[in-house]
Image 1: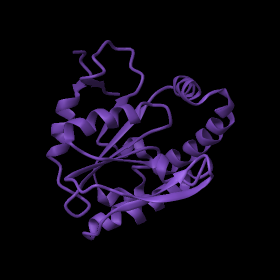
Image 2: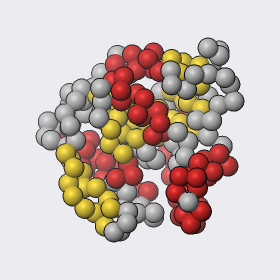
Image 3: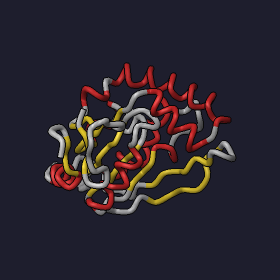
Length: 197
């Protein structure tokens, strides 16, 4: 293991030791710019923590909706959990360009919220742990275009501009409990380790 690597199992154990912040639920936010590796990390942590995942992609009202994401998260998920009510959210249908069905958030001791603006100050009082994942812009853009196709490049550019404004105002990276390199050059086992920034 490289000097600045951390085992994912150790990260999961560190999270388990944090107290719940939303009622009886420990909410872990995995934030950072698009294409940095948040979804991959969320899936790996979810398996170790037996935690459901709420994806911010399901909450934003489209490509120009980054700023609305934290409000949706607060209203639909965090405040209900904090007051002992069932949490649910209305899933945004990106193809139809409108909100679709309501999705119930499963009850669990730990919930992972993954996506840009998941660690916004608006919801910070309810979070138990904030993870920041970042990677160079060219790497992130390449990943996004490989996944979505070249036709989506203008959308990615619009989204990146919103992220820049959001993260500058929020100072998310500086508030994170841990910062992870989403495109590390250091040799490591990505299935078992993360590389810290």
